[in-house]
Image (cartoon, rainbow, N blue to C red; front, side, top):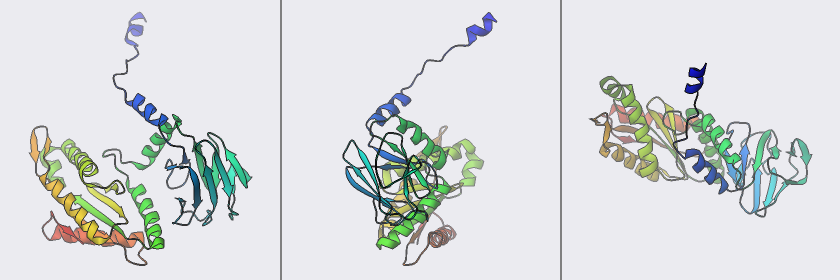
Length: 298
């Protein structure tokens, strides 16, 4: 028994990752955190002044759910106090499951617009760390850290509706790594994992804009959503991505690997749905691969 106790020791924390997260949370803005629906865990920062909430794509916070009215509610924030005002919505606004017309929200209150529930997190709350973890578990790809397939499809559907409504351009890219099976067969699956992670890191740090949304669509295939980007901008970004991969030094376990990607580009036309764009981009990707790979086609 004594020997067993001597082995039961508490490990000393060797990194400050948690401390960094806690310190960042203390500097965070007030926000709403979505508690159910497609985008569970998603953060909506609350700025000073008026914030309009509803189904209309032109509002400050858009919730694409049928139970939410086009102009559902208004939130008025003075930096300290959050006032929630129902705008005669069809299905009502609730705070802690009680219908309201005009109410001051407190820390941790649950605010419901139609069927979608949010939690009010004031600025500086360390509870932000928990909700960040919840969001990441629900929406991020475990290997690469970019968004997963479900999130990218849901987000794309929402953005297409918004851009159609506001008559602004929308484009997307689908790319995959050329001859990826050969990388796994030659260098092993750990090398393949490295290539996927390194490519995502390269794009996030060197090429993509802050507004671009990158997701893993499946296997070695990825999707990038380029909101408010016309076809020319999308094609330019695709070409920069292609060149970045071609020129990058992929080195794993002492082995240098020559990696390239093929990219399909699609741009939204009037009346297009998200599925139409996905099909168009996928056909363009197939064309890039069939015509020799390491190419951009639209």
